[in-house]
Length: 302
Image (cartoon, rainbow, N blue to C red):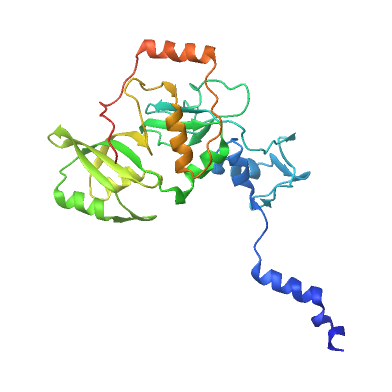
């Protein structure tokens, strides 16, 4: 019978077919790690390359994929992968001169240093801001929420207040609305509103739908203009409150947390509020009323 020939074995045929059509099972390891709140995907890639992560007892390699059954460990300690049963979200007013990573080789201040300490879990930054950019930065303890909001398909509005040096004509604004080609692809502002100013220094409110690196600055620079100040004032439906000065944080209101889960297409989880001591510290920082950035404006849908 033909079925006795080696090439016609059912198992071999099935394996060949699977090899042609299937993809590796599971998710990328760095994505799974980032979702637990340990850090950004890029940071997790560095941990993997440094040999700090293991899968089922073996040292992980960059490019590994894992299923739900895989046993993960970081620095020899088992990793709890269960999603957060509850959530906590805060808004931080980032000043210029802080980095968005948990530590910095150059010794610069990080955005995590002024956040309230957690008895369990970790603060996860929802997106990032450049070193010289100030404004609204959101943090959560729910890695699933952060991961969904940061996914490129989320298309969430981010509004910035920007001071531009140079002559800005209507032709420039039209090009920025229609779209220009940057080195990493086309980009545009979905909305531009005049914010006032005199001479060659003018303020604008601009809205983008992505969070590409230095996207707002690069869009203006593509027109031969210089950005001298940049502040994020809105993320989705969440605006930065005027009372929250640079270097201060505030607990998000329940309606704002629900808005974030709605944007992420996730079911909202129970909200855990700040402890009495944290609320006391928060009110103390507001009493100082220090810092302060560019003038704000009333809430406006972009």
